[in-house]
Amino acid sequence: MYLRQDETPKGGLTMRIRGLGICAACWVVVFASCSRSLSVSKDKREADEMARRYWDAKIIKCGDTWLEQNLVEFFEWRQFYYTVVADQLTVFDKLGGFEWTGSTRMRTEAWRSYAQGRWQDWKSGTREEGMPIAKKNGRWEYGRGPFALDASKLPANELRCDQFPR
Image (cartoon, rainbow, N blue to C red; front, top):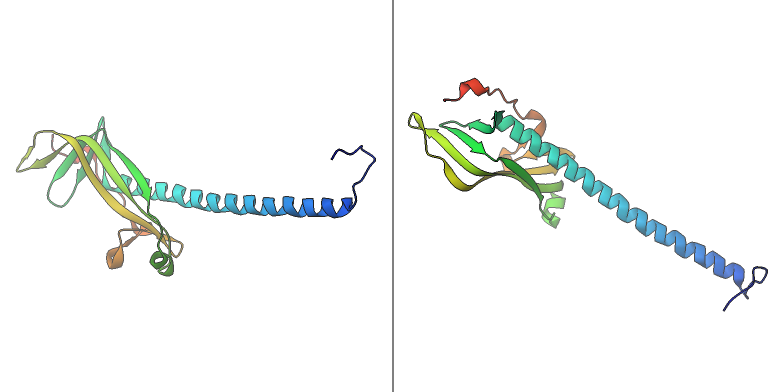
């Protein structure tokens, strides 16, 4: 049905009000979806920052290599990078106060360790290592369960390049 500009169909005001109501409902759905994705994006950005802080506290970059010292040996990596992967929150997670769960994983294409007083041969292929990360009751933590570390208490990296064997 086509109308001239000065014509109004029967019940025209009702149709306009219904149209406005439908339009408003659509905006509510769009806004709710956007606000949910903004929240997810905020948690993902925070998780990325927690991962960066974790790896910065664990390793040090010296030239074109990354180094780590654990309790018994040193590690050297080349082509180091890390990822952050979110887990699907379960009902159990939500009941436990978790708002985001996932992990950060490092990957490297070449690595070697220092053991028995010398650097071992370079190993090719991927060496992976990771750490669970979670946001629980508004606070970020590393690890899971009773030994989880509050992210605000992550110790600073005190490693220096000159501490590593050459």
